[in-house]
Length: 116
Length: 109
Image (cartoon, rainbow over the protein chains, first blue to last red):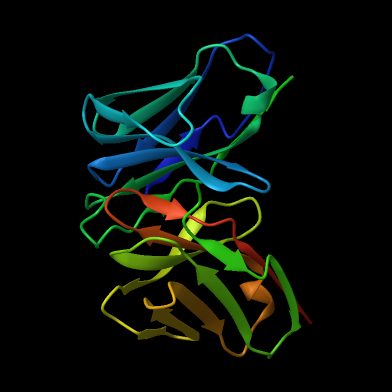
């Protein structure tokens, strides 16, 4: 998985509780992404980062926030988890920027989150 | 708003046969990529084809791209049990990579 780890790998939490997922990379890639994967929807982009402290929203950002204080770490926070946020969350990294025609993404192993 | 849509959604074939999956998209692209996902794992990049390319090979994989029809196909030749996985196309346009919903491929022994 290209030097990308995610923690925790599995989590069960209750509605209304805050949850933070961590993505850690050892590749020194500039770009990092958080996706969620749900049956019938494929992969959908939540947030992405194009550098330390530089982040932007993706397709399904409502209810999520992110932070990137170091190149190697990208955190995804669910401020108040809801059952609709039950999903598998994937972190990805890339070396080149989107839109330049060279972007290949490398994915972490995923985090399974269940919100009861 | 998914850009790529794979067809079929599921495909089951016998080991040794060829598997073909298709991807259609809606807007202009810089490139189109195919990824594989084994059960319970992250996606793994397979191959990238640029918008000015028509065909590309990598081992047992053959990808074609028809920009006039806004479609691509992934052919896996001489399939093996280990090819059982979900396959996703992803299109890169002006901005971020957009993934389709995937084709679930099952190789039967």
